[in-house]
Amino acid sequence: MLNSAWAAGKVFEYLDRKPLQKEAGQLEPASLKGHLTFRNVTFCYHTKPDTPAPAPALKGVSLEVRPGKMTALVGPSGGGKTSCVSLLERFYEPQEGEVLLDGLPLHSYRHQYLHRKMVMVSQDPVLFSGSVRDNIAYGLEDCSMEMVTAAARKANAHGFICQLEQGYDTDVGERGAQLSAGQKQCIAIARALVRDPQILILDEATSCMDLDTQLAMQQVVTGAEGQTVLVVAHRLKTVEEADHILFLEDGSVVEQGTHQQLMAKRGRYHRLKEKLFADLDSAEDSLSGAHGGSQPKAHTN
Ligand SMILES: Nc1ncnc2c1ncn2[C@@H]1O[C@H](COP(=O)(O)OP(=O)(O)OP(=O)(O)O)[C@@H](O)[C@H]1O
Image (cartoon, rainbow, N blue to C red):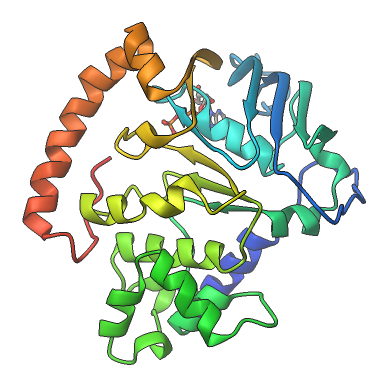
């Protein structure tokens, strides 16, 4: 049986994950623009010894996530989106090429500094058994109630939190069992926003929300003033607003531009939009009708 100790342990494990590379960077600059660059990055998942290496997940990828802008990674399954995020989080190191932050190798920054400045929200965020407030303020020493509620409002969570029996003091249950998947994502986004990170990475972070909640999240997704936002998404509803869209396929960036530019090009993005996203949009439309937009629950991926 899973218990709260296990869940809390998972949170610590998640938040404190150390990079695989032993090299300990020491940089902690006072100001950070949040400019991310992949320069000729080739990355292959570690394989067992004596087995043939699989095809690289990323093949000589060069891309830019511009400071203060919203960039979206899109493309078919297996294209390499999550691999890019994993390299940014330093769960892995590329075999070739470099990942840079403000022009300097990511590994030259202090691990804790990167954790503060670059916050990622995943599709299936981990909540621990404890109050909603503690889950949002997790790990912050000076986090007032005002900060918690402000972040929850931005994350479209304040409304449903207030409807819980004990509001912000409600215990979310083992691994957030009392909340819907979409509500957990809203709380995870509030937890990210309360830290006011320079770089916000949303990896399918709104996938379990209904369409209305996703649209209400638009302001978060497009970022606060000066904040760099990287969104990994299959849906194009929010991605259409991105300053820059990178289309990854088979480990390479095959197209990039704004939504309008890519649609006009009538290439891969256009085809995927027409084929896959038209289906998703109609599924989402019927779901949002069914749910009325107030209770995020369904996962339509
Ligand atoms: N942990 C892993 N170990 C081995 N191979 C992996 C691992 N994760 C991903 N891959 C492989 O790397 C390639 C890129 O996968 P990745 O998850 O980055 O794609 P993606 O675009 O995020 O796909 P999706 O949209 O389905 O999440 C795929 O061929 C995938 O099978």
